[in-house]
Image (cartoon, rainbow, N blue to C red; front, top):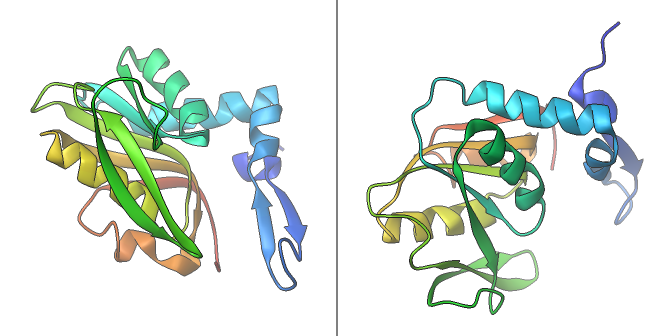
Length: 176
């Protein structure tokens, strides 16, 4: 039987605390077959979509987004942690479970009106992705689609935080 992308995800019970089933996506990345499968499936989901740039967030959004941009002949834009980009930036602060974080993008990441796809490894609460959406829209970009390798459905981010966007995930797990 042919392998599925989910076959490359390692589930670790009781991490980081009892009762949590941690879905480790790094085992997809370390497997040549799993990594190729993930990138190929992301590209397939974007087939026929007319867009200009892929935006990926630090750090695993870089890992999946950059090869998608390369394979489809698109530019790749970095959304990085505050203080990591050298030119003038736009920033967006968002809430984490225990505090806040800030992402930045260069002001000249793409021209106004650019058609954007966001690619990341995981959607849980959607906070990071919503911060990226806010920056893209402030810079005049149009978000056409947002893709994730894995989704934790229990957070319901696609139906709440990201409800205004066209969002897909390659694999999904119930719960949070």
